[in-house]
Image (cartoon, rainbow, N blue to C red; front, side, top):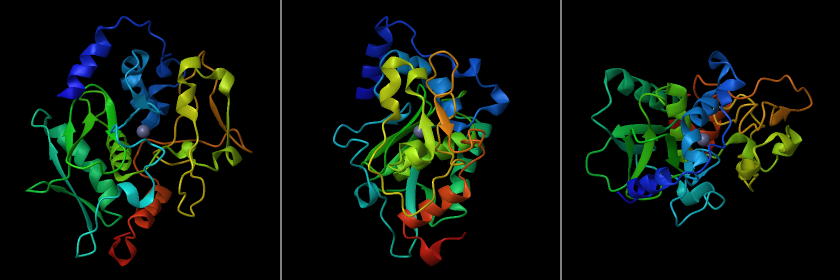
Length: 266
Ligand SMILES: [Zn+2]
């Protein structure tokens, strides 16, 4: 309820529309999951709505930076699996529900993380069609909203992206070692959105930098005038990001973070 009041407050403020439209630079058929998310969230961002890196909501008590490793993981059950309870808004139609459930299945079918309808659990995901596609980072306790706006966010890759935030993962290009793998073209980024390109002291779980992560920004994220903002190196033509769902390395990282071991079905 607090969130809704704050949202109305931001919408009422007449701030100039500052976010360039990603779709001007990227054809819809080429958009990755993050491109689609930014396309939906751009009006919120242009009005100063407090989403870090475009789609992460701060819990107030925890910053993106401090949510590492054990501090925000969902607990492991005695049977070795990690059950993430959820409730889902009744306003979604059947296709929407299938889309969200496909995003869940793309994670749970290859890891020990299982999304299960909530019965009595105190901590759970509350999947709602609010304005925008966004999530908190990791488990914050109690009911935590994952917003998947319908229409707009109804892609299984977008659902998987937001669910991975809820599992504790930040964007791939936020990694501490990202400068070895991509160049950030600061001059091409909208000036008041440059904070979205910070890198953090992340636990990279001994995994290689993953250009194909569903958590990777697109090449033109937050572009001021259509110039690229992220370029892979050494090969600038390496595709970055994708929209189908978690990459093999994304799955691998979930299995490592949650110590899935033999409980992984991958
Ligand atoms: Zn994101």
